[in-house]
Structure formats: structure tokens, C-alpha cells
Length: 159
Image 1 (cartoon, rainbow, N blue to C red):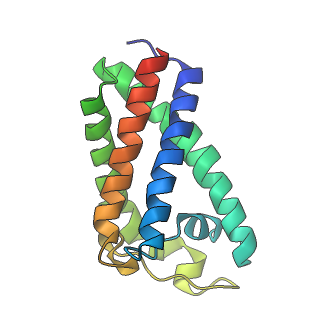
Image 2 (image 1 turned 135 degrees about the vertical axis):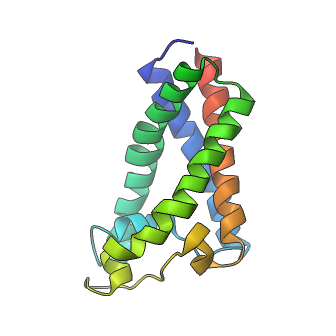
């Protein structure tokens, strides 16, 4: 399978839309209080409204579309497949890395979690985001599985 930037970026965008819709449903249903836009944007500003706006831009454009769209496409190129199964496996690994490594470390450097920044405060996520509710670990994995599946299917369709 070849590597192509355009299809990778489009697949990353579509995957981010699907993942974000699932995350928003989890919040509306009361399964989690995790707010990815506020967490991401809160690294840059203590103003809650600006943090949400900047956080959504970072989540959609930088992370979901560019960074992970390209990483997933590179992995699919490396393994020679963008099948639904490859997407699920890569998404599962991604979700576990975020939940077991990135989220627990966040309190050490995030200004809104350390209490050293101005403006609003955020709770510590803990392992698998458990600090944001009992449904967060499953939602975290499901969101990344959805992202991986959609990115793989869109990328394969465009290739």
C-alpha cells in the first residue's frame, strides 16, 4: 500500500469527526465529564471560552487531521494494509497509550491541573481518564477504536 498525504489528511479529518461525535454523546449521556477541547485549549489559556475554541482547533486540525491522520496512514503503509481490522488494532493501541501513559502524566505539566495557571481548574484525569467518570475508560477506548476504524476505511477507499 502506498502512502499519500491528501487521503491521510482527509481520513484523519473524517475519523476525528466520528470520534468527536461519539465523545460528545458520552458527555451528553453522563458517561464522562471529559472535555477534550477544554483540556487541550487549557494548556494555552485560562479563559474557558477561548480554551474551548483553541482546543477544538487543536483537536480537529492539528492532532486528529494532521498528526494522527499522517501517523495512521504511515502505519498502514508500513504494515501494508488499511483494513478495518488494522484500523481497530491501531486505534486500540493508540487509546491504550493515551490512557495508560499520556493522561496520567498530564497533571505534571498541565497548568490548569497543577493549579499554577490562571483561570479555571481541571481535575486530574488519572489512568484511562477515570478521574472524569467511571465510563471514561471505556469511552476512551471506544473513541479511539472508532477513529482507527474510520481512518482505515476512508484511507483505503481513497487509495
